[in-house]
Length: 160
Image (cartoon, rainbow, N blue to C red; front, top):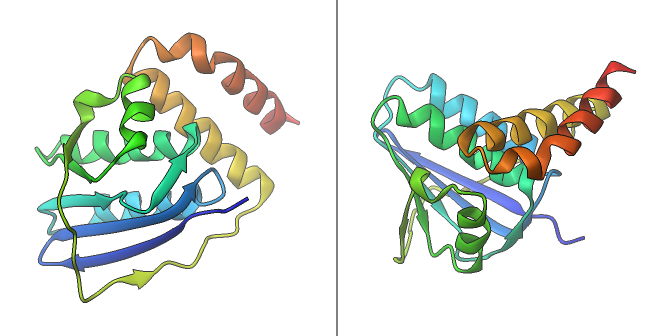
């Protein structure tokens, strides 16, 4: 499986993220750490996610993007998704169009830092998967039927 690499740049309250490869549950914990960093930042003016080289994403990763969008929305910040391509169809298919500002443009930065992929425990990964799917269900009620079985299965796994 070709897992994604995630690059981050931050300058004057603007967070930029570049995703290359296929964004899946394997990199979701790393992306979730970024969500926490953005949430905890005292100066945040914008979030741009460059999907030019993102070859696809699974529902867990889309859930983490949704988590980010909902958290910054409280501060009147919109997540800008750049060059989303076919990923736009995936996100829109989950009713998430209202959370993102889609644009086609070049994203540049001299400060790109490749993030270390956070290798978490199986239990921590399961918690990330659970939270991501719950937020997708919260973001659009049509996702309840799509993900209720995933949520039940992961909750059962976590209870063991």
